[in-house]
Image (cartoon, rainbow, N blue to C red; front, side, top):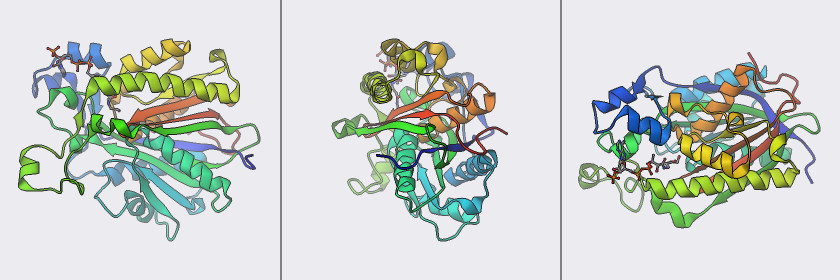
Length: 337
Ligand code: UT7
């Protein structure tokens, strides 16, 4: 039995200024705007510069989320950062972010669940807030996949982009906030999406660099099949837990990987496509950032109303998945500039 209702008090996001279009990619690899658009729905993505890192965008997204929630940074007593592209292997980017925000002593850690990381981090934060040890959490999903993408591999380089999304979590009025959540993993699919070298299995050597083993390797169609199945099944289970019909779901904010995955999931669920928020055309797949970035755009668009039922559902490396069903609002200073 939950004693508190934990919800989203504010959202924020941040992306690099630099735009990489499909036309730009046509000059780099053997691809076409037509192929990328029809197979993925992506038109452009944002790419960080050499001097920008995960903490650059995590910081900006956090500042905006704090502003939108109307709370001071000092009220945050927990930071979780979901990322597979931290500033460095360690310390955690969350610790670097804590210092950038001028905060001290509060717990700060990273969480690795690939593109499902944002939902994982929100669920972990919710549990810690439920325990009563902490009152307000900053959760950030940030990834700069351009830093681990092989720009000679057309099967992956057209897909990925960079960015960050953040939320402030805290107690909301009864009936609002997180109504149901689900986290899962199928470790047998680990090989479908990975960076083979740079860990303890294959530490970095000249050969691993020469063989491009520090870049993303993906079995695209295996991930695709998993994604469609899990997005639909997880969303259905969340609806069942809360007792909602497809008509009662106002918005689905899915992981933004491929429009075809989203439309296939929509048709399996019987939820009209218009209720799926989509911005993959503008940012590509930004991994752990994607749901937070989409949620922030949806919130700022004014389309999200107090009391709306919102599903956030993602899948990614692991293979993992995460889903949350939220009743939007119920906070004193809820979302909006
Ligand atoms: O966040 C989680 C991470 N990943 C994902 O969500 C990705 C999930 N998977 C996908 O979105 C899709 O599987 C892809 C977009 C990656 C690939 O689409 P697909 O429809 O599954 O294409 P495919 O891999 O089956 O390739 C079809 C053809 C191949 O040519 P042949 O063998 O049929 O002659 C590829 O070589 O398309 C070719 N191809 C390309 N052609 C032009 C692959 N990439 C490209 C490209 N431009 N960029």
